[in-house]
Length: 184
Length: 147
Image (tube, rainbow over all chains, first blue to last red; front, side):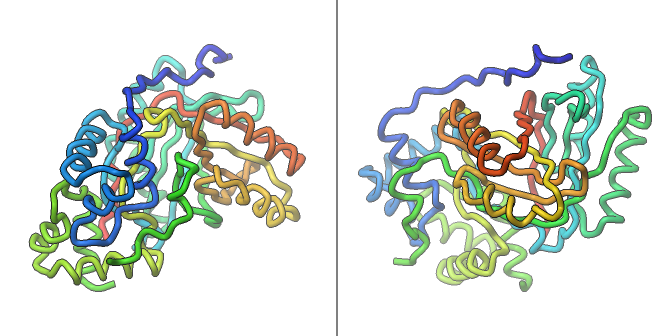
């Protein structure tokens, strides 16, 4: 049993002040479409443009913001097939195997998660995207041979349907409902 | 989607500049105008090619929490259960997958304690067990789609 592993690793939480929180809240719906988006964001958060830029750079540096940019709906750009592949990896090898899987460019996510015995024995997850199921399975086969995974039990869970893809929201207040992509 | 749309998507997956005129800077790199770039991004969001334009936050470092959860839903009941589950604003993604555990969704909450509360509420609403599969270790990958 891996009950000892069932507690997620503690994460260091960097200190955020009120201005950081106002800024992150104003930004969570997306970046405004304006020639000077950071100035507009500042208006909402009560900060000047310069200060917004400095704070965002810091928030990115300390990893509160993972990255800036666009999130693509993979289906819409031609990656119609995606499979979550789950592995039953020995606890003492799972980290090494995770790094091996994560090294492939067709892998978009890779995590260790707890087993839920007896119903669920898998502890290593990765997501493979491809233009077709055949492509996904070919990627998988290549991975199995490259990382030496042929002896590990695994299952391939293709997605049948996407019901929801709205992204995460961490700030409940004002901005979640405001349409902020209106142009100025 | 034309060539410029694809260039925009590929360019912006790599990040967005922090400067006074970021759209102008990206537009120049792509050989287009600031107005055209903004119009294109707006259109790609509207037609659903892009789900988001902005930052990706690190849930835990913000004090929030994320988890993956799974349910075994009887086929005949699938639609009804999907409606109940998706009604929670904490459900960020939900996929039907081919397995006995056939519904997989991501929960994103403002605080770690809220995860258990939402799971308990979903179990109560649906009468089904929710398997919570929180991340124990993350292996870094560069998330990127060549459009």
